[in-house]
Figure 1: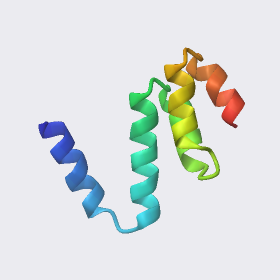
Figure 2: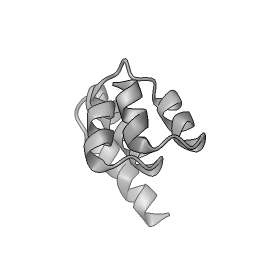
Figure 3: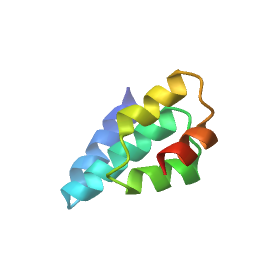
Length: 71
């Protein structure tokens, strides 16, 4: 729980909404099993459906394959 509190505090300290959205998307993708590189690339692209990215992983699609589909 302390890690979540730290993350929330760091998000609140950011200057722009765009930065907050990027960090939320990136952390969600990392939690869904994407590696650092793919999570970063996917999080930067707002046209990529984050919920679809997570669902692909839950359905058993390997993260590298899912990233290729989404990008």
